[in-house]
Length: 427
Ligand code: NAD
Image (cartoon, rainbow, N blue to C red):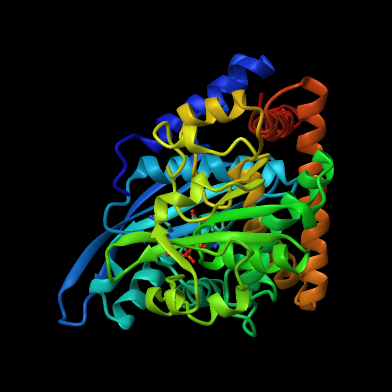
């Protein structure tokens, strides 16, 4: 996470601003601007060559007033405790804004899995669990995959947890493979969830989806499922962009009368990279990736990476853009966000727009705890209901108080958590 800024400072600054608006008492501010619990530990791992290497592990439980904490575990060589603390805090707000009974956590191990064999990775996962077993679990804190961790890692972690406790506790960890405790619909969840919020926002703006065009940054997991559903509902995607491994730059592919989703998907690799030569052969206009933001469309969907709408390109957003839906985490810098707010473009903020993933993880946990699994249709229809309700709560708050949707989402999320803390008698 080569960040030029400290993510935890950013997360705290956002919180402080909303604490001021909500006029929170000092104890609530002191409690919520820091994690409740923070674990730092060393994990000795016997490497394949016989030597022991010591890895640094973390877990941060920011707040669990609304329910057991939930959050990812990432493997990264530049992992820092401040990144983990920020992600844990954002997770608290994300669960709260979509009204699921979970708190926020995040964890990690400083390591580069590319340099570790499968057996070394397995021992590392088991070592992390041995350090944390007393402080995680289905009723305490439920880990999930994140950057560079997979369903396989989660399964090794679960197996170690179950070995220690001598039973089966499938609800102790989510992101498990389907068939061994995973949930159907997880793959679609974030992209579909994003689309459900777009559908609701258009309804509110009085715009028919069939009359809209959209431009999307990214063509990975989130973007693809959002596009699939959007085109099924009658919308037209005029441009998608992606990272082009061969040229080492981002490229955009445009078709003014609408892209053919299945055709493009057919020439895309598993990392969301579209084959440039084939796209050109199929008649797509090939242009620099930055062009995604300049399109004459009603909807912009940044669904690739952070800091992609900045003070340097925000002015090139077309007058016709009515809606921005943040599929990615943190795609808009604060200075650009201020301008979008002034332009009165409807903003669906990241921690609401991309919450489909965590909602589905919650569903996985519920299914695992009851050891009864739902059909994909059931998962996706429950996801639709949750996302729609969350969107309506945020937009009602924004209308009632005449504020920007991002601020409304934060106010709603932080208010819910601080009320839970005070109802419990913590503050
Ligand atoms: P992914 O790896 O499947 O896809 C990423 C896409 O972005 C690829 O198409 C890639 O080519 C493209 N990309 C990379 N750099 C680019 C650039 N400079 N310009 C244009 N395109 C570029 O990732 P994903 O799972 O779809 O996640 C996308 C974003 O959504 C991330 O910010 C992630 O944190 C966030 N998110 C994902 C989930 C989830 O469930 N997958 C949940 C919440 C948030």
